[in-house]
Image (cartoon, rainbow over all chains, first blue to last red; front, side, top):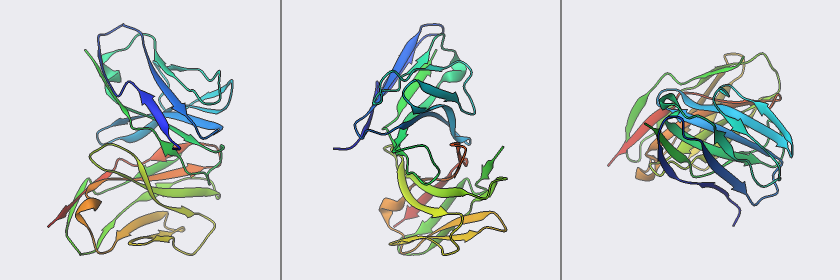
Length: 114
Length: 113
């Protein structure tokens, strides 16, 4: 089944404790991205990647890191999480970069930083 | 910078009736796509419908249709014969050629029996 998976689905952590949220897709998609969703703000793009080893900042990259060493994986790293990073996070992928492509979303990861 | 605005934070509709969700946007580009995504309580993001900016004909997908007014930068979603399963958060989104996908703040739709 074609899908985007994220792990973990739920995470509670404390300020400053490094964490990684994994994202994997099995559709051989080139384009992958991360979003955070906050009430009233919709989804905001954190980082995106147009292909292996190519990543770019989105609207809200501060406090986040990403890497794209393999085509299927695009982990999101919070080196020193803070409470303002408490949010719902979505990973998405599409066949290629380009406005015509439909984005396929993962199920979301709910993060609480205490 | 591009922006997407959904001016209706919450809406409700009776089952079997029709409802229209509003969306306005701003972009300096001529080539872009517009999307409506549905987010049910499960939090999954589901594509409802998409519109290519260079196409004048409004997109339709079964009970879902859009009213795309390019000059006015308006992109509303009409849901006909509303069903209880349509209860969800709906997001309007703009994807430009520069690979940025921008979402509106969302409209929470409640379909009442």
